[in-house]
Image (cartoon, rainbow, N blue to C red; front, side, top):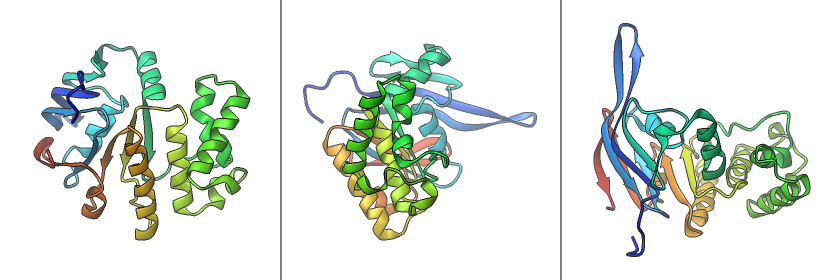
Length: 232
């Protein structure tokens, strides 16, 4: 970490998240504190139920903590309205999911353009951005195709391009290689590494140790807490 950095990109302070279960509750995160600096590449690991997905959802502003503080670039996320949270997600965070989450009725180009539509980007500029991103992920010849006409690896590359459309600072990846064969997964990870080299902050949930090895840091979770950091 370079000396000129001031405010971390992500700071979690004693963050907890509880869900109701019948008459009781499940504590998915238990007073978790964590700092992610700009440009970090962090892999989050742990057994099922350890809190990995809950952590990613909170960092991605898809859910709110029960208690504690979440500061994103110095601003406290919990104080934001739902509309403001939507804007944070749209402008600052790109999501990459194991199941791709592409819209089947839309073409590759239209799927990539989707965040730009919500940002009300001028159509010609959005189309040009989508074409540039498709070229970057090696899908220039697939712009008119629907997701059903693509392989799993191609669909994940579309998902990466879509995640980058609004030029977010942060990429959140939830098991991005989980549905892919080994060779395709390696190519997806090379794409993510390239984005990290370009300055993107990446937080990736994975259960695969060989995939986690691509990250600078590996965070092991258990029972809603950080069990250990590797690489830091």
